Length: 125
Image 1 (tube, rainbow, N blue to C red):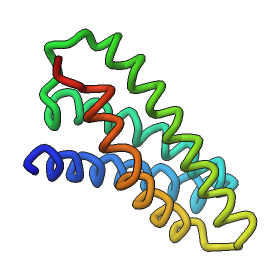
Image 2 (spheres, rainbow, N blue to C red):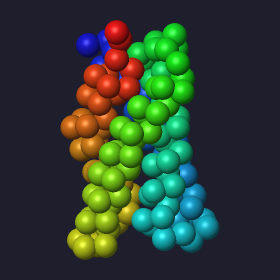
Image 3 (cartoon, one colour):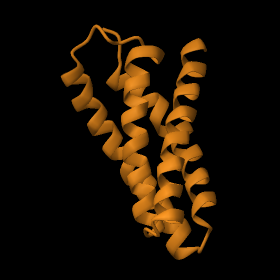
Image 4 (cartoon, rainbow, N blue to C red):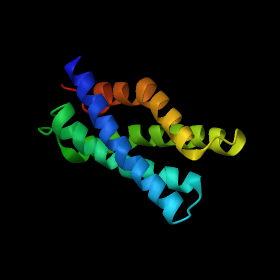
């Protein structure tokens, strides 16, 4: 339970960075909301990997390159799910981009991210 709570704190921190990048790109640099959302997801993924490795799962004794490769595979699934969710909500259903980003992030965090990171990326041997 403690690890799950820490993972959610890490996810919120990464999400904050993700949303900040997204909003800055869309609102101030006038980027397309889908591009802004993808860019935010990339930045948030890097933050989440580092927090997960060093704080949540305390997996800094494993090779960072192997964990990084595993995370990249898992994160690619995350990116595909996020982009798909954003595309459907923003482009097809015309949902405001922040609402679409929050809804997509919450669903994917609960259904995919924690489980994949715990059981695959940072798995204790």
